[in-house]
Image (cartoon, rainbow, N blue to C red; front, top):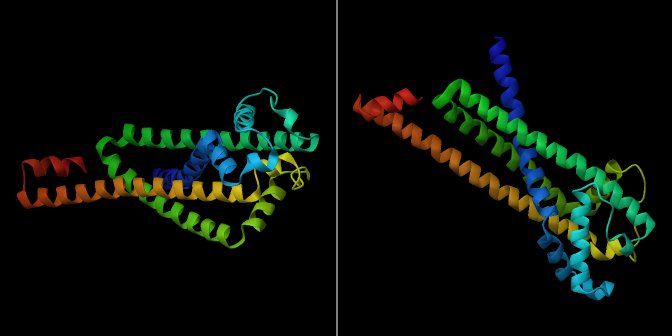
Length: 239
């Protein structure tokens, strides 16, 4: 009974961990890649609105990425007001928490898969495939709801996110402030949609591989029953 409870509990944690792992990993890669920032600069003509050269915009994005990923001070602080610098410090703290969640999810998923293989060997893979399909289904449902919510009322969600994430009002920058000019609200909408689409593609890949594996095993098992031995015996022994 105890083993069954442990199995159900650990499986539930793993299934819930996968959506978190996918969204945090995908968001982390996007936030740490200058292409996302360059996309926004080009789409919203940031160079024209700010008067900054493309090389300066590249320096800013690279400086922010370094700042968010290390203990060093903001090297491009000269472009921002004290309020904006304070807000960027808050963003850095939030991202540090966000990155730790990502690392914990990766560790939990790895340990769960490794332990399952150590205990069950070949019997583990079909069980893992089924759990991955369940997790992918949960992720698709959550992200479909999120995508609809973002499309219907992004501004309200964006404001709500800032209110619960920060304990001050430094995030209420003015339209004339550099942060707002560099990264207007539509940029964050675009970034969110990019993450949603990327996670959807990742779910599709995981679902296809897991589903194809289970179909393959089922057909192999049917063939084993039909032949009554030989290759079929090995197939039955793998289950």
